Image (cartoon, rainbow, N blue to C red):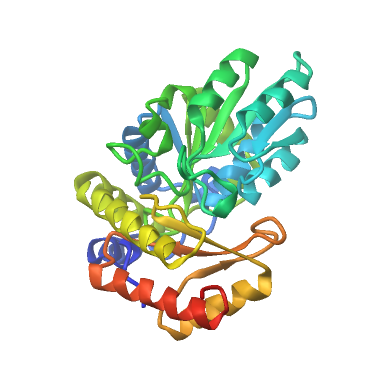
Length: 354
């Protein structure tokens, strides 16, 4: 059982079809050669307006948007990243040749120790996700939840002269009054120097974008290898993302409904005995532990008609496998009841609930 996100919205699908009819299935080249379309520029302008950023660069995938950050780094720089940041941010640091240090998830004391121990003359960058999707039971949902501690990060960045990069893959389109993400929700958008997003979550298609100061985006257009040497985003995906963005802006009730549904389901899962603390975050991490037990629960849920995601190492630390439940605004109350009932039955058969 799956409820349709914006990828199944008729307006988004029709925009993609119309773009194919008008512009074809692809441009066959990178943005710097023969691949850039007026549609790409329209999407970038609209995203910049939405995110409240001076400039935006659209990429062919969210992974490539984060990989572009590597162009801002050099061998003498130090990057301090939350331990749970996505693999593409780690790859960006490697591509840039900088030194990577990892701080414990949302642990500001540990982050400060790493900043204080570093070379004061080195360029320093803090990387985090706006909302983490694999935090499970390693995160204190009762305080900041699976949202980054941006107030703490911003304070330390000012103190130690570090830049802040935030991956808003899961929070853009959802958090904040306007849906701009975790930074807006915290009221600290000015504290984030560069923000990246993906279109594969709230925007229902494929692609990504980097948002930030105009001089930074202009530099990335000509120096980020993931931009320079990758074929341009297809017209269908660009048009779909643009249509989805308009829906996100025009229909804020979707965000409210989604967060209400998430609070209800996470509460019911906690009531069943799963190690889930109730939260209004739509990506619900259900800790399981060992990989085989996680696969067993996933299969039992699948047999109950509920499709989830089994997250195992290297996606999560070894021994901290979890089931990830991704809700959408179109999940009905009846479907939420069915999901909870499936978790009850599957958990008993898998030996996780008694």
